[in-house]
Image (cartoon, rainbow, N blue to C red; front, side, top):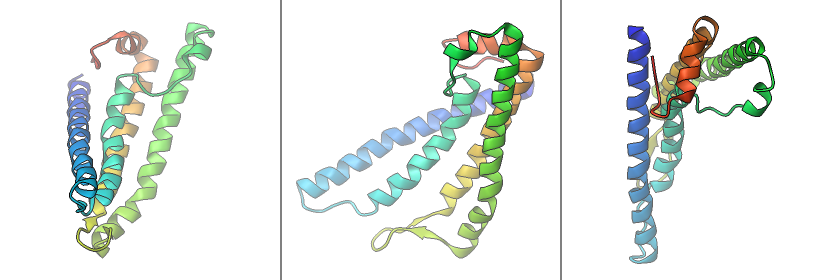
Length: 175
């Protein structure tokens, strides 16, 4: 269970990091709006920074959403099934989620490497933002999300009480 606790701490840290970055982006966007409307001088590169940051924020928070049981699911349908069918449906859903993120990761490897090697940038003019950090964050976050879906499937099959405690816990993650 050491790896589960380590994973939970990492996902919490990444969620906090993403939330902090989203908070900082609010001030970046605000400064651009004030600059454009009050001083007639926009902050250059805000569009590119925000565009890449939103993708990073989503992939930083995906693992936490998976482990905390916060990902979208149709509970109103599942609750009508017997406990065994619920467990099978949940484990199948977790495996499908892992498969989706595995496709994202395997499909993004070549693009991330190409972005790094080619020195790919977003934007023109005063501020050019490199694309490779976003592409590698997709790989990192997608890999962690895939692993968390697999972990949830394993817990659902072998320790369903842990998954129930996880979704009932208001504080977030449990081991």
